[in-house]
Length: 372
Image (cartoon, rainbow, N blue to C red):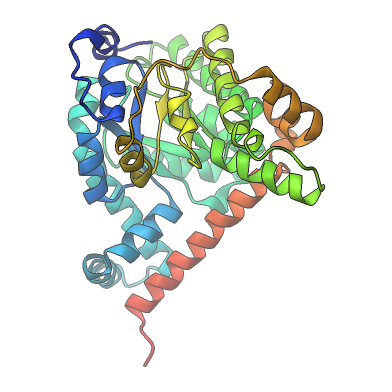
């Protein structure tokens, strides 16, 4: 499923100025879509200049953005509380997340129209406290979907999340699966989305304008593999440990392509430039934090197609032989859905998202009920 604008970009390399920033050059000459891993409006405006056609929001991003712009968001939080006197701190915080997401989505509407719904979307993340409740995830996904025409909703790739992803897709919600680190999770997500799309197709409902993606948090997979190597006292060349996430991303992309799945892979949680440069050329999404885009564009990358260049087999073999956790992440059947929740990177990331949610509650409390 390729929009005509993307096809035109793929044929335009001969007329694109080599002096353009690498992210913009890749966006204009390949099928690789750039999204911004932040809903901060200042960053998003600049990222759009770098070629971005999407963005995201989650508890960590919302907490960071509100804290960075407290002169603006402090009064807004107090206004939300005043207008909704029965709201808890959590409800006030999530209302702010919704406002932030709608405002960011508005900046992306031109890309949404240009790409016929495949890009131009703002990813808004469901409450991490609902990660084990499919019905609640679907209900919140439908609410978020209705906030703006170009919303895409993040649901975790947990065992319960897979159930929610199929049902929300069936109800017309475009999904961005998150808390996802492994090829097995990505395939389970894409197959769940496929089932949801097939159910819609069978009933004559629209699927062409939906733009599902499945995130693989490559940098967080690398973090977990490094932690396991330390825990298990496994010594590896440090350079080897920078490639685990890239290897999983490339494997998932190949698998999606071979199986004709309608979901795109999305690369997120950047820890190195490989998580952009090694994926350029693929019909997928890369979503670096804005600072990573600035750094990439400050360096002489040629934005060459590398999606089809395999990770050095010696590196893959070393990771596969020395770190059983990499096998779980790399093999298509490395984990069952019942095991998704137990994977170390899943637990660590859910805990971070839950902690950020609690921190957002505390920030709201300080604004609406300051200490004497």
